[in-house]
Length: 163
Image (cartoon, rainbow, N blue to C red; front, side, top):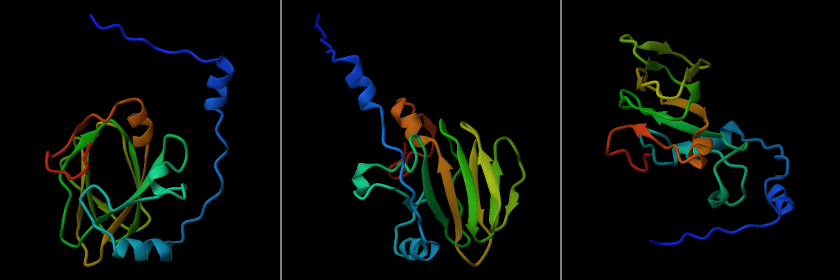
């Protein structure tokens, strides 16, 4: 049998470790984001994720436990149904399309400015009905779930980078 040895350190060091600096204000200009979106790779789960870290390897959270990503669904394309342990709050930034959510059989029409809440484990997928890109901004608690080792998902196996 292997002995597993842990370690200890002073409680005040533990508290100091979790005393984070307050986040600093940040602004993402849509014109700059649109340029980056135009030049980025689009997979059916996302294109870009916002970060407040100067070094993008430093993290994808904009607030502890929360991230915002941008997903692009090209004209006449759709994402495949999936569900996972984290929630989404989608904001339709551009385009028109549909969302099929949860157990519903009929798709819900989406237009610029609409918000869509997708609770954890609620199946969802999108379809672009228009001639322009359907651009969805997604606030999610995926970073929080990752820290809890909860990246459970029911997604197609061939999703690149999918948890």
